[in-house]
Amino acid sequence: MPDLAARARILLDLHTAPEILVLANVWDVVSARVVAATDGVRALATASHSIAATFGYEDGEKIPLDLHLDMVGRIVAAVDLPVTMDMEAGYGNPGETARLAIGVGVVGGNLEDRMKPLDDAVAAVEAVLAAGRDAGIDFVLNARTDAFVRAPEDADRADVLAEAIRRGRAFLDAGAPVVFVPGVVARPEIEALVEALGPRKVSLISAPGRSLPAAELQDLGVARVSTGPFTQRVALTALQHATAEVIGGGVLPAGTRALN
Image (tube, rainbow, N blue to C red; front, side, top):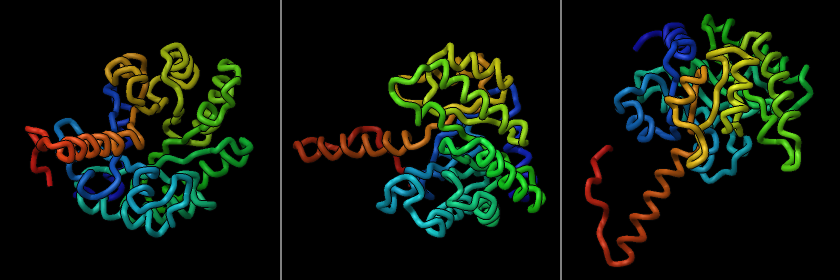
């Protein structure tokens, strides 16, 4: 396995390459191994919501950080690919949380701004990047703004977009290589984000039945698209359907593969 700095460089290069980086988020060792073994997968991203759910916790930093990091560390150890961690909002100390994540082999991470005052959000970005420098790596921060996901339902979308751009520019100026804007699925808003923040600077989440295909996002200049908790929901949906079929007198689906 390449060393930490090399893995960080690989992950950073994947964000700036012409081909969009597609990340199917994982939540435990077996999901990580299945995704890593899939043709075309070049890096892994963990999903905090899914890891919390695995242990019976609600999302939103309800899972203890040490338990969260333990699972992420197990994922890192199980695969030979760069791993980026969803650090939520940094558990009250983004720099220290990033340091601990790097300690288990993580080379990138998401950090939510939760619409804190912009100066505070930028300081958190700077703290995470400083932790990476202290460790001797180019930590790939996917700096997230919650402008869209926390906006009131009746908010003016143009105003929300403007705020997302304002925050995104501040995070890029602070050194973040990419800005994550969940809640955006409409082509005009994606185009506006890419125009304002630059090509290969915008990161999105793929929502079932709503998002544009990854190939189209690539053509629009998006750097990265991930799946968040939705991959775990895909797996759980398949589990529930299979269970209902067996309970109803049927059999498990044909074509089920031994992936573990």
